[in-house]
Length: 313
Image 1 (tube, helix red, strand yellow):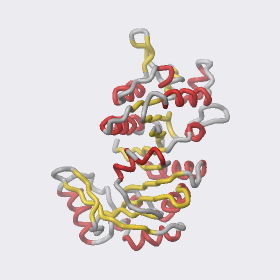
Image 2 (tube, one colour):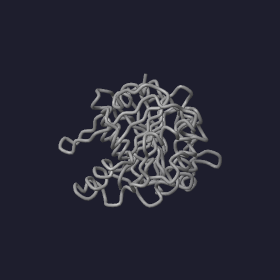
Image 3 (cartoon, rainbow, N blue to C red):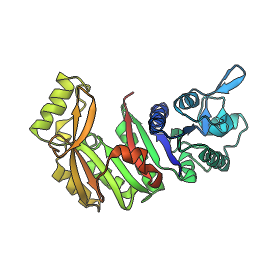
Image 4 (cartoon, one colour):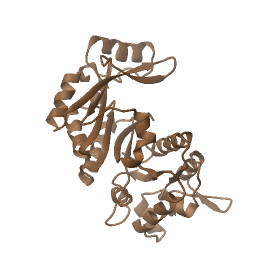
């Protein structure tokens, strides 16, 4: 069975290609035949008589299996504009069925496929279809890339709500990592995640605990002493105690299955799960905890996960 992901973003130039290439390299390291699709690319230049798109070229560089250009990017548009505008200027009709056919052809050639969308999740493709319709037509898990810039939290929440509205109760696994402590109404984010997950599915939340130890390590230590993060990244008043998160989870109709701590070793730059959740905690709802790397690399074939990926631009 082919492992496939649909990578979308809150906006254009947000880091979708960066994350897509990282996923491809991860699949390759696991020994999978990994390939990429950029079904619609707007903005192409002629090099040695051949049209090239920078994003598509970066995806090819990270893949171990190269698809023919007409399968990897069935719609390569010259104009660097919104896809429906660029297509109209070139007299091209963006045909969803053709993209699905190309995806099925790619499945015959690879074990893992990363499909990168175009622009944001609701970018128009035709008069009646948008990128969200493409994700639904392909039936793929959605990875949402959020760029750390002014307005990003609102953009992330709006996009997550759009995905939840389009595909409610569709995902086996939902992850919301290091986000709750940055939003004004974390309980609403928890409810959105509950809307996304299938009955009996798993939801992962990670956030910072509100106590003196957490303040000293996550704020004073990480921001001011080690300078691992910009000063002011965290607002201690927004940190969330496990009991508070558990209340949000119950109010959203879920239950807490297990709580684990997350530790970080600055010397080895490795994260690990622990039984100490006094600083950074990982909360699993409605299921059993298991290795996140195993989830991403191995178990993905049978699940439909929805994940927040945040890239600092």
